[in-house]
Amino acid sequence: MNIIGRLTRDAEVRTTSQDKQVVNFSVATNESYKNKQGERIEQTTYFDCAYWLSAKVASLLTKGTLVELTGRVSTRAWTGKDGEPKAGLNFHTSNIKFHGGIKRTETVQATAQTGSNSTAGKGTEDDLPF
Image (cartoon, rainbow, N blue to C red):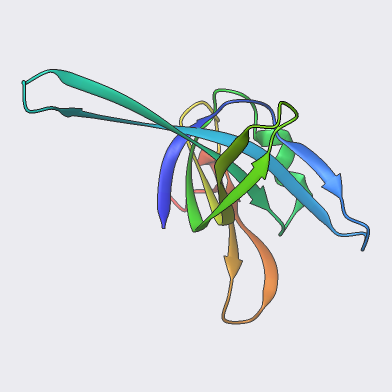
C-alpha cells in the first residue's frame, strides 16, 4: 500500500530489548469528497508508522515533511488510561520517499529480494551526468 501525507511530529528512534533500532513517526493523510447533498467533506486519517531498516533517516523525518510511504497497514486496539477502548492504524514502512521541502532527493527503500537493508538515492543536482 502507498500513502502520501505529512508528519505530525518529529520521528523518534527507539531501541528494542533485542538491540534493534526502530524509527517511529506519525503521518496524517487528507481526503476530500462530495456527499449526496453536494457538500465538500474533508477527512483526515492518522497512521502510526514504524521503519526498521535504518535509524539514520530519523533526522530527515521532521514535523510537516511531506512523504510518500510504501508498506503494509495493520490495526491495533487497546484500552486507554481512562478505561475506554481505543483503536489505531499502524503502517509498517518499507520505503520512504520525500516530496518537497528537502533540497536533495532522499529515498530509503527495502530490497525484499535480497533480504538486505539498503539506502539508495542520496544525491544532489551536482550528481547529474549532464
